[in-house]
Structure formats: C-alpha cells, structure tokens
Length: 98
Image (cartoon, rainbow, N blue to C red; front, side):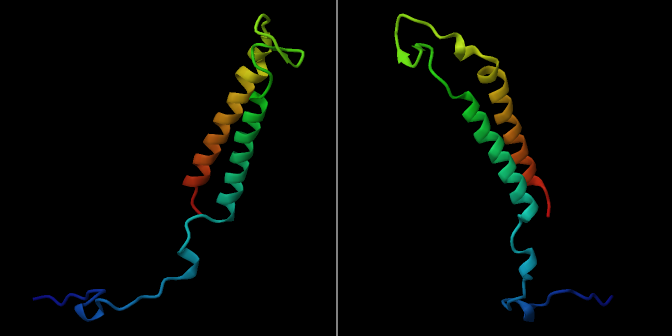
C-alpha cells in the first residue's frame, strides 16, 4: 500500500474556502477599454449609414423622384466596414484575458 496525500478530505467537505477578490471578475480595465472602442466603431458605422431615403430630394419626400445618395460609398462600403470592425473588436475584448 502506498500513502496517498489528497488535497481534500471528507472532513473538508462543506467548509468555505477563501476566494481572492482579484480573480472574481473576468474582465479587467483593458477589456472594458476595448469594448468601448468597439462600441464607438459600431455607433459610428450606424451614424455613417444615416441619411435621406431613396425618395427624399432636397429635404422633401417626393415619390416621383429618386435619390442616388443611398448608394454612396459612405453608406454602402465605409459604414458597414466600421460596424464589422466594431464587432471584431468586441469579440477580441471579450476573449482577451486580463
């Protein structure tokens, strides 16, 4: 027979152990900083997508007119890119260890 040394015994069952305050929360300041940066990219992307709709020309709705501004580079390419970059930053912020 060999002598085994166990970390825990039956006598230890039910006793509370101290948990350090340092390791109780997963996210640190760095994580929150990256989350705010990602959120800023997402909000900025949605703000860049804003503008008049297809039938608004000169600030007035006219169903007989067409506004080509809805297909601008800003609204079709740049704004969605900002949103996707923002979501990628959010994933990084969540997965980043302290």
